[in-house]
Image (cartoon, rainbow, N blue to C red; front, side, top):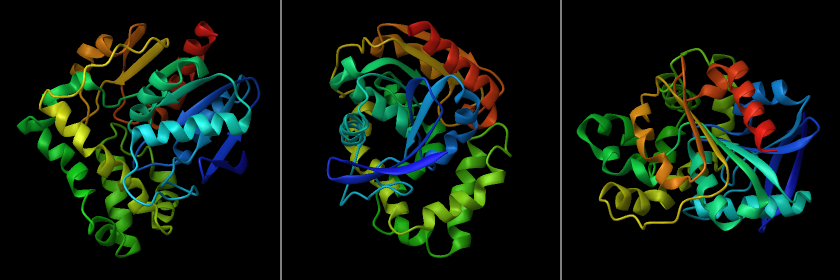
Length: 285
């Protein structure tokens, strides 16, 4: 694995890269950083060039000065492609990464040959995000906007480990999916600025999330980049039933259920995740 830093839009972005062939950009979620993709990267390195940045605010990348949302990250990713000399890439992401991929596809569709998503938020979820049975799942999105959140979570190594482990285990169907890297993830989020840096996404996204829940989100034309979605069968955060309106956001959609996994298919079943990614990008070229 090659690690290096790229200057993009005035920020130093850490990138992990491995493999040769057609380039795939891998965008992580929260509470994650580039390392979440390592099992998939090692399985695809013989066919693709895998590029996994730490989004601004995460890992070893620079931290934003304030709220930093999907459109901001998308601008960073275009600058990253420019800095790496990549004209067109495939993009793979989930969770926060999936939120970033949507403005990226709207603002720079000519740079993308295809989009591959695992579970993520999109406008068609709408008011379902705020139904009573969901409130116990999305409480963290409000907590992350509070100034005290990084102070409380980062008070000690044990508080940080407990907080991060809760989400990595609760959202997973295979509960041990992150056990081998839990201490590495804890150390990552204890690095200066990384808790607040990750929470900056939720601070920036709050108004759009509320508008979506109230049915007041702007209606945008469908994304035309070829899209593949493999949605987890057992995601407690984003149920599979929420895929019913994906075709309103993506005009060329290949949707299927990903069996036997929760919110993190790329960690819970990396063999199948890698195979699904390879099949899609081999098809779209």
